[in-house]
Structures are given as C-alpha cells and as structure tokens.
Image (tube, rainbow, N blue to C red; front, side):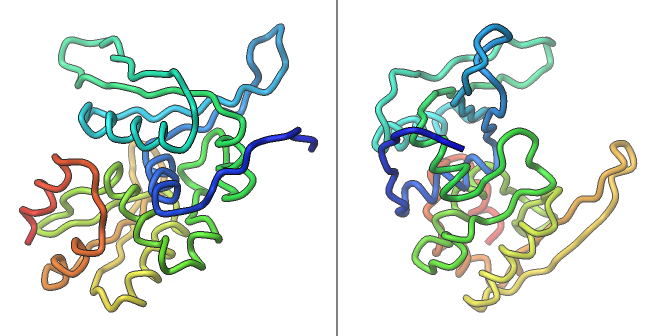
Length: 215
C-alpha cells in the first residue's frame, strides 16, 4: 500500500503511553471519509468518563502532533447514562504510527489486540504502555487491582512483563453468558501492589485514587 509521505512519529514513553490508552479505550477508524469520498479517513477517537484525564491525553497528543481538535461532550441517550467525553482527531502520521509501526489493528480490535512488538521488546517502554492501558481499562478487581480483556494474548503479554519484574499476580478466564464471549483477567497480588504502582506513570487522578485504595 502506498501511504505517501508522512512525518515520522518517535516511539518514546509518551507515544507508548498513548498507544496503551488507545488499545484500552480508543478506536482507530477503518473506513473511508464518506460514501462519495472513498479516501481513507485517518480518524482516531478516545472516549472516556473522566474529563480531567482526557484533557491530559489531549495535551500529550498535542505534544506529538499538530491538531486543532478539542474534547467534545457526548449527548446522553438516557437520563441515567454516565456522561461521556471524547477526543477525536485526524492525523495521517499518527494513524500509520499506530497501525503500521506498532501494528495495532484498526476497526474492531478488543479480541485480537496485543502489546506492539516494538514496545514488548523494549523494557524502557513496557510500563509506559501498561500505564496507558491501566488508566483506561484498569481498576479494582475484588480486593486488589487489575483489569480484564477479551484478548487472551494481551493479558498473557502483560503477565510476562510482570513476571520479569517479579510482580506477583493471578490470571483468570470466564465466559460471559449474555454476550457468549470469553474474557480474561489479571489480578495483582496485594503484597506486590505497591511495587506495581511505583512502576506506573498514571495520568488519571481518579484512577490513582482508586488504585491507592487497594494497598
């Protein structure tokens, strides 16, 4: 595929963190601009409940690329629905950084996503990626902390990184009857939660408070 000239995006701790955020709660669009304009749409969307956290993600993104896009408040469909906010931007260089350099799949990815090989093989970037993943998908898991995913490979790769750092944890799997889908979970051992948290660079204040309570 001829992707044309794009400005290279440097893989560092900030871009690795954003990759973790996008794997956790982002969407890399896989379609065209419209039915009449079949040009590729380089749209990337991050949608969360935590507005303060999303502002930090917006700021980090704008340190890497130039975009005038801003955060938008999602219209509620139901009165009891939690308020959502999304940051949507289009940038060809960043799009191909994610999909070509890091090989993060566009479109539906929840069951097939994994840690990009360029990050998995770099010990200096592994925890930056996991920080982004936990800022979006992390939380309380029983009396400790952890996260769940439809991707068994993603959970296994996180487990491998934690083993290298001698951070105790447990793996789980179950079938969600309502969705007829398999899910996989990872719980950090309570005795190692401090060690795990010290290795993270969490941007979400509410997530830091949630995780602090697990110590």
